[in-house]
Structures are given as structure tokens and as C-alpha cells.
Image 1 (cartoon, rainbow, N blue to C red):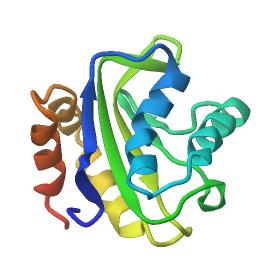
Image 2: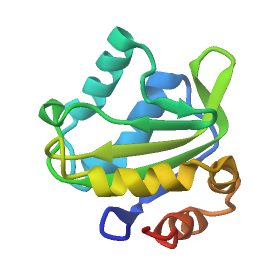
Image 3: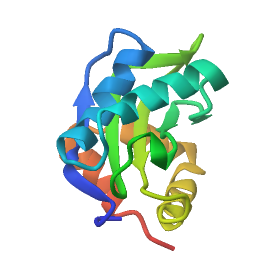
Image 4: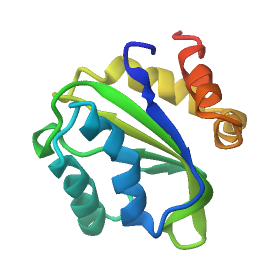
Length: 147
């Protein structure tokens, strides 16, 4: 997981104006690091407007992503904890936003297996959502068993 998640791509924020602002905040570290183009943000927002919040997988967790051709450059994750949560669906706030960038449709399969295993247990989502520092969030991800 440490090759897929760099410490500088993990952040904790108190709140966001709305769901669109949260997408900007969550994806910006990947833009800054050269993992995605700025239009990747627009791709996620546009897809959500067309398809609904397809990226809300379970309560309190959103896996933000767009198609590779919408601006992904190379494989990487970013994790944003929004303390006050953000509502992609009315009445269902998400505090954990995991952004996935992958340059093709297959290169991220291994990391998806790890994330699926990690977030199959709601207690792990809660640990991430309530972690004290971004370093703590980062440790939860990189120390989660790969298999």
C-alpha cells in the first residue's frame, strides 16, 4: 500500500462548503503531485451529476474516481478525512474520502482488493474517520495487511 499512498496525499479538514468543494479538496493533492490533471476533478463532479453519487460505497466512505481518460496520469491514492462529513446523498454524510487515480482500467485491482478488505469492517472506517492526525490516518492504511 505504501507505493500507492504517499504521506503528502493524506489530509484532515474540518469541513467543506458542499460535496463539489469536497471533491476539489480531496483530489487536489493528486493534482499537486502530478498524478492527475486538474480536469480529473471535473470528471468526478460531472460523472456524479450524471450518474448520482456512485462513489459512496458504504456509510461514511466515498471512493472518488473517474475514468482514466478523464485526466488520470499515474496510479495513486489520496485520503481526506472531513471531520464534519459531507453529504453526497441527503442525510448520509461521509467523513472518509478516498480518491483513486489509475492510468488504465486494470492497474488498480490490487489496491482495490486491499481497500475492499479494509473497509469491509465498519470499525476500520470509524478508525480512519476519528484518527487524531494525518500521520495516524496514513499509518492505518500502510500498515493494513495486504492479504
